Length: 461
Image (cartoon, rainbow, N blue to C red; front, side, top):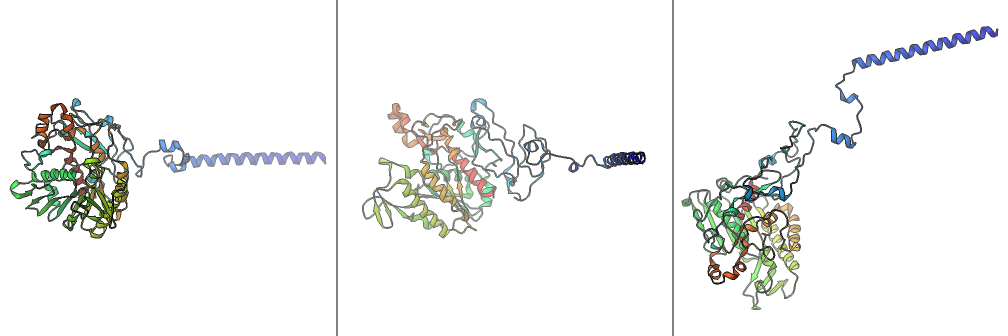
């Protein structure tokens, strides 16, 4: 009996072992069949590391949603001095590319990037900032005009006529980092300004800009088809007859009322009242304002004696508070009088001055890096930038030409303006003290400002 039980148990173990082996063989056979029919190219069936893995970010092929960013070169490597006689090549996308549908993202042609070229960008990836860039030396570059082709350049800005011996300052071109800024096209601008009116309002730097713009447009069409009244300093106008386009300048360095005939017999800045010529600003299609330099004048150069605010005369008030109140008065006028569907408004940032330690006298090259001294108070810049940011619903734009101007210590009028010739002859030992390091030669830097105005108006909507 015991022997029979042992026999049955051995038979049972043998049966179980046989069935287990058979199961294992069938399982292996099934796996082989699955592997034979599996598509080896279907990457979704294979194991991959987690998507958040750093290795995955570095090694994964670039898809259509990859965002490219251009490298940010330093100014040391991007400004090419005249000695090199070669301009840097900027292989970037045209500004027109940035008018495409913001929701559309194009697939890169290849996932392999040539180190010598930057990837094509569209507006969905990165918006172009035309004020962030570099000055590139163009030895073959010629100015758009000269004193012969534009006869109404103000004398103190007509450097070549007043004996400036070098021309290198005319051969630099501003290039944005992330796109190509188109060259100024006067005929195209006039066509786009057909039946429209443009005004520039502000101090002598905006007058400098108006003269540049007027010369750019004047030399684009037959002179017989243009009327220019540029004799006065407070008001200037150019009319292009065939386009019915008008370009005006209004003198108003503070943008608010500067009352020189106040009942107090003092020169008074009325902080809550706009400039009297603001009545003439109404109805313009494009407005370019500026105010800044006159607020920083000290001592004998300071224009005012008193402030007036809410009917009270005040002798003491911080420049920051006065500037803030004045610019808010201007902003209030903009909100009340501007139709955002008709008028485009710009506020031009401060134009660089090269006084003090970094004197413009005898300078023939731009700064090659960011070592220039910032002379305009940052506190005033912050006031106007915060104000403009708060006016975004009115689409007021900030024409930020400050930094690109700070590099151009070489482009000022310096001693080459005629009204100081007699002083120079009589005081040769002190000639450098007569240098004008505020205004700019024409042709010159303000032409770049107007190229950026042209691009901002029509090619970067």
